[in-house]
Length: 227
Image (cartoon, rainbow, N blue to C red):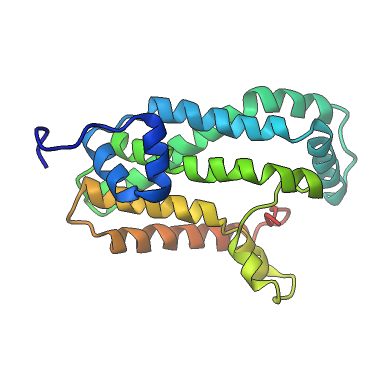
């Protein structure tokens, strides 16, 4: 598609909507014009808002319980830590996560598999794809507050509630459905960047990676299950 025949580049709100309903159109637009700064700002603000909407005492209680489960006494600075983390740590952490995820995607497809793609294109894809789990996360704030469980997610483990507590259920619970959705959006974009790479093959690679990471992290002691 040439620049003359290409449709107008969508605005940020429209791109956010396309992430949910038209990832193919989003991928095509970002492959041509890999913007990312506005979406990154929006994503970090939405993520930070989730932290602010959950009362500070719930975060403090989570940190205290984690310290007690580890066999130690909760440090006195927990309250101050969470107070500042909600202001600075959350948005910085979200941004760092997206840059690292973009680097991983570029490493897999551009360097290992030899696709025709640039880091900026993958960064644009990742940042826009993360709008899905972050916006859905806003809808989960209320049940997280009601249950007092800030790690509550929509996850694969919810469909396997009949499994006994253990490694398998923990790994499945760590597979967040909205993050898997985001990986599929990225897979569609990877196909748009290099049409020789089919959506199916990109999806298999990325979903396989997500599953591998979840089952690997589930081996680590003290890792949250996501509830």
